[in-house]
Image 1 (tube, rainbow, N blue to C red):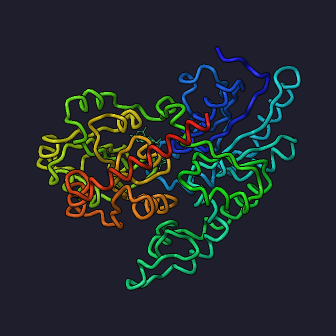
Image 2 (image 1 turned 90 degrees about the vertical axis):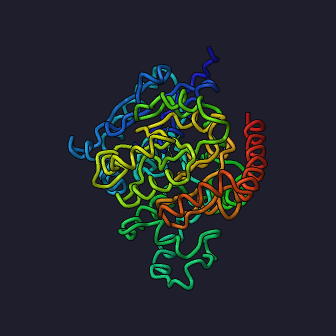
Image 3 (image 1 turned 90 degrees about the horizontal axis):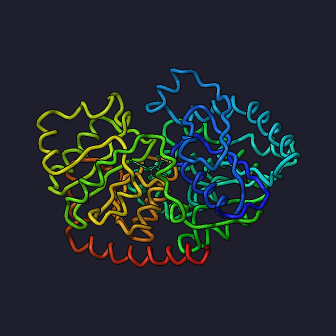
Length: 436
Ligand code: UDP
């Protein structure tokens, strides 16, 4: 058992899979360095305390009704988070105050670490005289753009076809057509959120990134200039501790024996993460594209992924039969283990930051199908800067999917992508070793 240092850290993750994973990985990193850990969390998407017996978990009320929690897989995540941000402030303050009082008789609480998406925690920690560190679970380049995103949104609201591929000079490597897709339909609602995140991060005691200089040296330097706080870039967190134990969904473990029966680098893994939704037409196009590519595939179809459907019922018996010949569909996979499997040769991904990092670290080249937000940026880095993947350019269309899978898995372009990725993977691995 590691030596304890008599200090406790309070963690408060945003209740989304892509935010809970890095926060609990960070908890493990800190615990291995001697800190005791308390995790405050909402009822909605509560982490499984039983998977982390060394940490203390405290649940606070989030104000969501039973039906809101049940409908969450198909709801607008942004509006859910906005509501939780309003209703959680008071219970969070009470909980933190109580912990600080209790700590006077036991371990000292050294700081609060919470997600930059919490809008009230800086004020609460200031009022209780507790230093707050901000965890950013996406690429620093994206956080650096927060101060100018509202401006870019209005500037590039309407982009003509002829200028769609032009670079956004204020926000490279984005193209003009990417900007409106970052925000979705109700972009203006995000403006005040972005402003508060910038203001509260500047007032914080420091910023933690799951990133490294090998991936974004200039952005990390710029983050220090913009936010004027100490920056801690400690590499991809999953390189230290797997995300598996913080999974909110039941992982289908049959993926691994299925992969064991496949040839090396022959399988395309398909997953669009925990939040993205697609239409039924897009879903059927992905199905036909995969089937027509004739490559084995492992496809995560999260219940609620397809708008208007419970799970995979839009697939006709005919398509289902042809899919089953080559592939396997599951509701949720042990992704990190899957990407590390020798049989995986490519990843059709939405480019969430966790998935992008996991793919780079396992040396799995990508087909980029971003759904919005920072995924638009990550996918441009993957396809245009690091050149370790193929961009779908928003075309979720069966012929395009088939073409991209073939290009990645069998053509010479795929080979070149694989070589570049091997180089990037080694660079990132070195950063993790240095930071040990
Ligand atoms: N994940 C998983 N099983 C799946 C799909 C995803 O364990 O079937 C994990 C994945 O490894 C990653 C996280 O869920 O750690 C998704 O985070 P990401 O930032 O990629 O996307 P988000 O879900 O936030 O859009």
